[in-house]
Image (cartoon, rainbow, N blue to C red; front, side, top):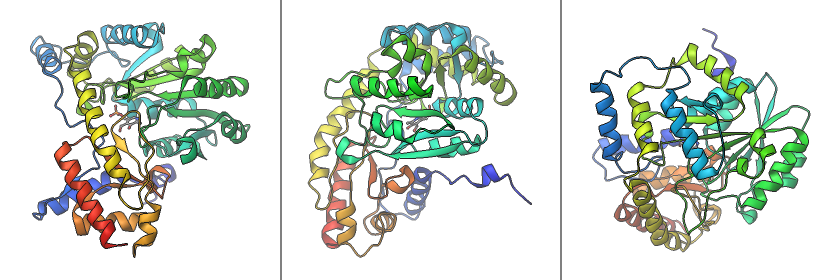
Length: 393
Ligand code: PLP
């Protein structure tokens, strides 16, 4: 059978591949430490679970509007006003089945075959594949470690062509954890306005920021930039609700209308019970979001230096999310393994530690370690990694 070229061109998620291999080893009885997780290791706060349960008992078990329940859109609008100082009407918001679905339907809506989307590296694994599925062409611009992996206005300007439709900004970033400063966003925004490039601002890690820093959305900088930006966010990481599949997009009314039409023929709507859970998440606050943030910050502070001290490792200090993304080129060069991918495979086989190779993020000299796991597990993983590098140097 001849398959769709678009779908056949997709590579499976590297994050999921390593997790599957780790599971296999665990099933064979090995003591595997998995640092591949892309989700908080806490359960969803009780008040959210209870609100969702109540909604089902009250009979809210049916279809909802394709773009999400009006009361949830209003709660999201209130959140955007309180946190970002931005006004959005309900018809400028769509509730989706997770931020991933927000992004994929956004690309499907705005891209025509051959349109280019600028993706700074290192990037979240799904961006290029989502762009390709939509007929678009990912254009990678290298985020240099010397500029903390951040795209600069000069680099952006140079990579724009007549076909450029959009640029993705992910702050804080998966996989690097770095954040853009307001002046850096303003400079990028100026270039986007000049060339009429749509900004896709993925703010899914907005609530996981450390060191007293504050999140800035590029849409906050000026009314012009608000009009030029589609904000993508959701409850997955902030409220530890990855399995509930609720995200949203806020921005241009017409784009939102087309995304809603698309949803009406594809998903129908995000699960009603999940939407009620997300409604509680946004309307109430029992302190869990901040407690989880504190726990992540504490872990980061305890492990960052130890990781950086491993021979052959050097790591840009993250300011958000729950990942560390060290450059391990020297450690790999000192070892018998030819590539980081092979080194990662050997680490899993020999020391039973699962990390994600940076190749899937467009940064083949790096690896990603998630600290969405207990401190104890992370620290013993670091000991094993140190032993592995010492053995192979
Ligand atoms: N954007 C980034 C940068 C992510 O890391 C993730 C999840 O890993 C998502 C979007 C998707 O979030 P969701 O689970 O809400 O689909």
